[in-house]
Length: 195
Length: 344
Image 1 (spheres, one colour):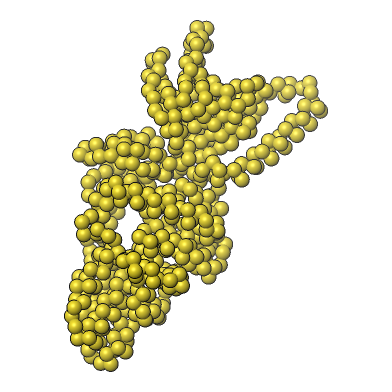
Image 2 (image 1 turned 60 degrees about the vertical axis):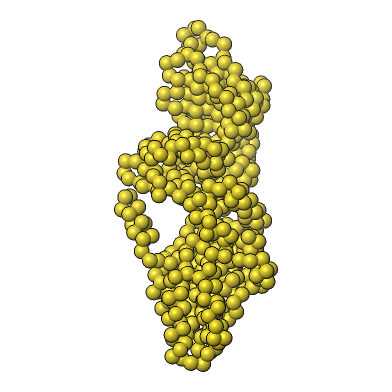
C-alpha cells in the first residue's frame, strides 16, 4: 500500500503531462514526437520553408514547456496548436509582440488563477458557492440526458472503463458507445463555456 | 477564456471538438488519428479553443463525481450487480415492485394453505424470518413486506418477521434508519438485544453498537424500553423519544444520555451520503471510522480543527478518505494497519 503512495508521488515529481482523458500520462517527448510531423507540415504550408519550419516547431516545444500548466490546461495538444499558430503569425508579420501571449494562454481560462492557488480555491466561500452551483447545473444536465447516454458517460469517466469495456458491460456496440459519449460531452460543454 | 471568444464558439464547433475528444480517448487511437487531430487543431484557432473547453469539461467532471455517484447510483450498478448499489429511495421504487408481487403470491398461498389445512400445528407457526445485511461497500435499501423501508449502513444486519399482531425487526448490529408505515393494529418493534424500540408510524434511526445503543428520531415518536427489566418482572415505562432527540444508552447504565440535533440530520445518511456542515475534520474522521471500524484513521493533530462542509458518498473507507483528502488537498497514506491523513 505504501509503495503505491510512493509511486504516485514519484509520478507527480517526474515531468509528465496529462493527456486528453486526464486519466493517463504521457511524457512531453511522446506528446511532441507524435505531433511533430503535423506541426512541421502546418508551419511549412504557411511559410514555405522546410528548414525554418523545423526551427519554429522546435521553438513551439520550448515555449510549450514554459507555458504548460496541467492545472489550467486540459488539452495540451490544443496549447501546442495555439503556440504554433502564434509563432507562424509572428514569423509572417515579423513581429514579436505576441511573445507573452501564449505563455499566458493557460492562465486566462480561469479568472484569478494567479491569485488563487488550487489548494486555496477549495476553501474560498465564494468559489465554493460557485462550484456548488456548477455541480447542480451539471447534475441537471446529466438528469436530462437519456438514461443510456448518462450511464455510458458515468461508467467511462468515473469507473475508468474504456469504450470497449463499457460496450461489454452494457451490451451496446462500441461505435454507439462513442455516439453516446459525444452526446453527453456536447450537453455538458456549454456549462464550461459560460464560465 | 474571455466572453467574446466564448460567444463565437458555436454548437457545431463544440460538437466537432467532442467528436475528436471521444475519438482520441478511444482505446484504439492510431498515429494517423493523432496526426489528423493535430491538423484539425491547427486548421483554425477556434478549434483549439473548442477542444480545450471540451477537454476541461471531461477532466473537471470529477468536481461532481461524488454527487453523481449518489444521484445516479443505478447507472453505476449498470445492471451487473443489482444487490448492492446505494440509491435514493425514489430510484429504487421500480425495483420494489417485486416484493409486492411476492407478497401478493405469499398471501394467496397463505389463504390456500389456511383453507386446506386449518387445524394443523403449522397454522400457529410464526411467519418466515427474513434476514437482510449491507456489505461494506454501500448503504442498502430494503422494503419490508408491510411497506416500511429500512436503510442499512454498511455492515448492518437485520432480520424481520411480520406477525398477525405485530411487526418485529431484530437489529443484529450496526446502524439502521427506519421509515415505518403506520398500522395501529400492528405495532412495529426494533429489538437491539438490550432494548426494545416501539413505534407506530415514524422515521427514526437505531444504532446497535458493541457497547451502546443509540436511538434518534426524525419524525413521529418512539418509545424505548429495557428488555432485561421487563424480563425480570420490573418493567419501567418506556422513554419516549421525539424528533431531533438522540438517546445514547451506554452499556451498564439504565438512563440514556440525551442530546439534540436537527431532525433533518437524523438518518440523512439513508440517501447514501454523509452530510457535513462546518464539521471539524476530527468529527468527520470519527464518522467515517464509525462506519468502518476495522482500521484506525490517524489524523495529523494540526488538521483536527479544520472544518469541512459538504457530502461524502458512503463507500469503503479508502474510497471515502481518498475523496475527502483530494477535495481538501491532503495526503492519504494507506498502510496495512491504518489510514494516515496528513497535510500535503
